Length: 166
Image (cartoon, rainbow, N blue to C red; front, side, top):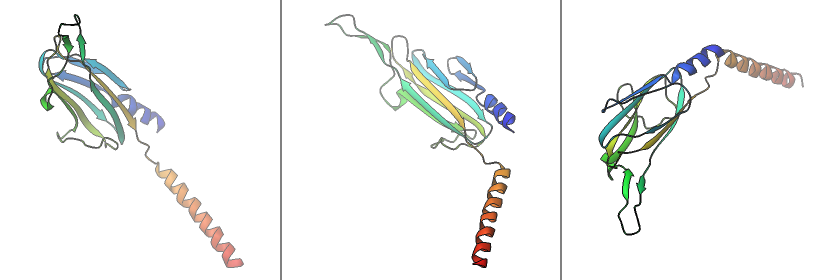
């Protein structure tokens, strides 16, 4: 059973990404850490993966602003930036039905997609960092429950027997 769980974990993060500007990124199971530079203009990136059991996803997405100063009295050149409103940079985790997932602490098996979209306005577009980590949640084995109930029954029987003979 342990080998099956390990195999499921290895297959868990078989992910591919595609964007509106035909950029694709592939990565495998484990902690995913991507630095992405969308071109100037609007973009949509999708990172799709499949969970094979009860899992938790920890993720963070951060915009990176970078500029270059030419001198004290000159305006800085913005290398990487995004438009300063909700359309400028937004993201979400969606289930296979396209519904927004608001709690990623206990996800059932199925296909999920991270969607990151926005408008890059820097000289070379935008730059963001995407990090995700999937953690398989423990599922108690049926044998453990049987042993637990058997142990409680024995404790109860011994307790009853002691109280009966005293």
